[in-house]
Image (cartoon, rainbow, N blue to C red):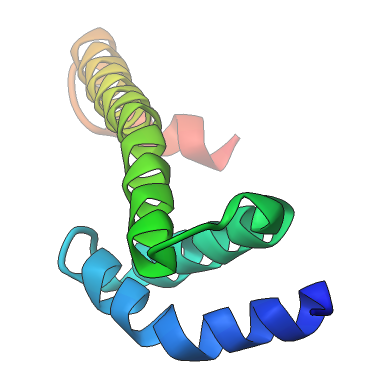
Length: 109
């Protein structure tokens, strides 16, 4: 059977279930990206699909989700550090100027 035809059949048969599985585990904005990643991986590894193809797809989805977690944690940590450094910088500016006028002046430069 042609790989493309096999993949299209696999996608039509299981995309809804994979999407539901992923939507229960990540915010809806990220879910479509995860589902796309699952099917890209499935396409690349189509020759390894044997037996229960849905179980294979869900295992791929679990792997994609697991790989996203460390990246999301790093992103949140960076966001927290940036927010803290911005607040600290504004506080130093306010303390150094004796009020808020220095902050406004620095943004206007």
